[in-house]
Length: 165
Image (cartoon, rainbow, N blue to C red):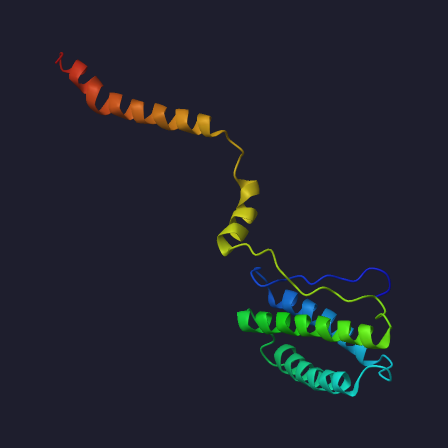
């Protein structure tokens, strides 16, 4: 991943598919492997031990969540846990860079933040192109016109057809 770091697809409030979740997990796994392959001589023993424990947690989560019979599914818990791993990784990467003086090749992908939009906003964003852009004044005029025509044909016209009031 030389040059520009990729970005994660999904965040805390985003609508996602299991493929989106797997793509984000693969990006994070690539970064984990990259950091693990770096020279760990300069960082403190505490940082190194913390990294190894974190790496074991990640590998267990990655293997059990994304390489099982059911896959990651649409589980919000898996998404939230993945975002926590992204955040923890960013912290370890920063510690490594600070203590070793070495930058990670390809940079570090910033943890997901998502659009923070509600499900209703996501649906509106999807449906908006289907709805023609119409001025509220035109809509109001049509509604008032229809209401007036209904009143005329329902109440006023029948009175005149019978011969007056």
